[in-house]
Image 1 (cartoon, rainbow over the protein chains, first blue to last red):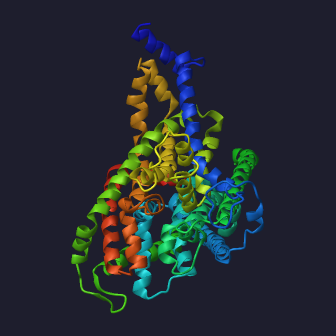
Image 2: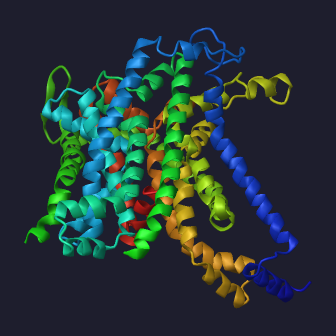
Length: 290
Length: 284
């Protein structure tokens, strides 16, 4: 086959349905490659889950000894570890609520209005996403040191809100692209107050963005290590406790807690995806009517 | 009038939070970095610029190593991520979001636990190396931990999704009719890729570079857990100076140097390419 006919055949294959054999073989290779990488990415997760069931003695959880549910029963037997997980969860809840509200306000304003200072705000958001965590963590620590503020639970809450606001704002702003201002105007014309308009018209449109942003904020808070380490003082969160334990051997309870947090997170995201799909189906005729 | 003020009222609380706890801290860090003193005697502002030169002469090895590891991580993640993002964007069909979900799966496990899992997997007599040694495929002295390969491998593992996502977003945005047009004009498959797909996906690659290079070069968790004394990165030094030695001025100076080096790159990036792709990718 000459080069030209080969080209024509390829071109035809790109446009039309049935493809010649070599093309399919290449697709197969890339598909297999994608799955290999996904398997590689999942490997540590499988190890974590598996060794939560390992019938090992105490902290030395390195060799497979057989199945047990012991660590699920003894989940809360290490007090410091339990406290650290409790801290992580309560911090994440507080942080998610506050940053969801403040972040949504910023994202909504940036999506809807053109105002002086919008460019600067955009640059601050970008800098916050792009700046290394260690610089944000040490910067905040420098501020607290200068002001003589002791580090602990609430300084970590402050720090987490600082980076979570940005992720909520970005997610909500992205959602604003799908937002039609004439809907709000129509509601106002029909006599709705600004608050009613926001509650019944604007918020439902923004909601998927707000929920996605809040989920991201929760995940980033509960997982954060670097910024937390610099601003926690002697307070321990789950990642901090695990990091400290890595020098002396991580107890299997860590695997179990990691597994439960993982399962909870996956469940939440899947539930959100299903809810999103349903509400999308439901809202389509309404949007068409509007 | 009230309408004109609306955006300012909306932005005010969050914006104030960002100013006080994100912008001001950077200035506080610069301030601390020029002080002298110790925890016992207290710290005083003396405009000690020599903190900077002292830190560079003491730790330039670790600084350069961090930049090299960051660069290696970035290059490897691009090579690993691109084919994958390409396949998902163009051939993923109905299951695109499922593939993306699987790639993001590691994020549901704490960063520290993931890294400890690798320490466990790569241990000298662990389930991988131990078994290979038992059947004689590897010499008994062979080890992966405490080598640059382990640290860079850990960094690549932890930051790969940050490269896949922006490349995927850029590829996904490409209008299919452009590819058809190129094919109609007798572009070969290779030409369609090099002349149409690749240039249009470059913004995604650049966004991925920012999202992987910066956290990789500034990381210290991977070096701490997977590395040895020969893989100490600049983040490890900053951590020790701040949290163990309480040498705040020196630590701040070093942190400012790292931030300065990375900010220079970031701002050049924002100037030339804009902020949109990075922010889009972060919004998922």
